[in-house]
Image 1 (tube, one colour):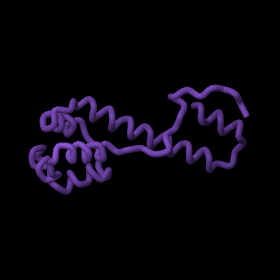
Image 2 (cartoon, rainbow, N blue to C red):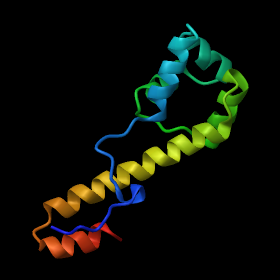
Image 3 (spheres, rainbow, N blue to C red):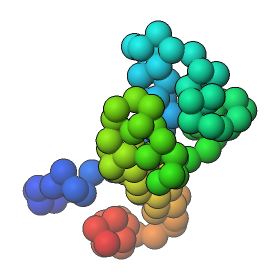
Image 4 (tube, rainbow, N blue to C red):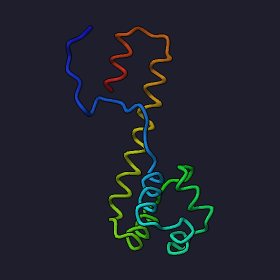
Length: 113
């Protein structure tokens, strides 16, 4: 086994949290209903439900609307969305490497790319 130190950037998360889960927690903290926020954002209640349940991603436009409605910067929402998407890709790639029938040395090379 190699004694090479792993950097935080080299680590792959085991799971990720969609921004909708964070939004759900924020609504609970404010004692606010999804339908009320959907109305304030000008989106359909089913769209809000899809976001909350991680089935629809946040867009820059929606991030700006959330900023107006909740006072949480649009950049925060978008950074969280992008981090979520990147982590999902890292997890997918890690699983593909682990599944591949190649040598451990080659797997380590692929993982460090």
